[in-house]
Image 1 (cartoon, rainbow, N blue to C red):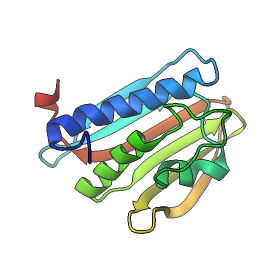
Image 2 (tube, rainbow, N blue to C red; image 1 turned 120 degrees about the vertical axis):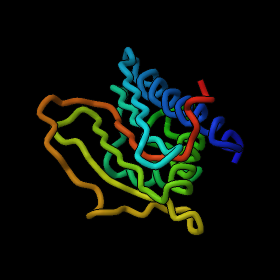
Image 3 (cartoon, one colour; image 1 turned 180 degrees about the vertical axis):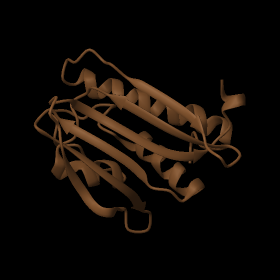
Length: 163
């Protein structure tokens, strides 16, 4: 996959794609971005956990599985296709993590209502469809009416040389 040729380039590409998506999720709704990025080494050598949190528009419940688990899914939940509708680059990052660590992506998202949604999913590469794990999409209380998306997954990389 382009941008994921080696662990050094993959690390850089994953961070860039997820931050770009977070910025765009804010831009599409005129929200001043507040983005948090954490890259943590795991116990295994050259395996990292990335977590990106944004205060963007969030993803409506009915689109969560496809938006994060289907390659080339069109994002009709916004008026125009933009860079940050969790497009191909973000899904390639998820796929790279899935392929290199055999682990699901964790997603929390809300459009700002009283409910936020959590799921773990993997992408069925052969059928291009999401595989929801651990009971599917779970509704959680959102007492602060937070809006945005949190995405977290592990991947094989090399941060020491990707700086």
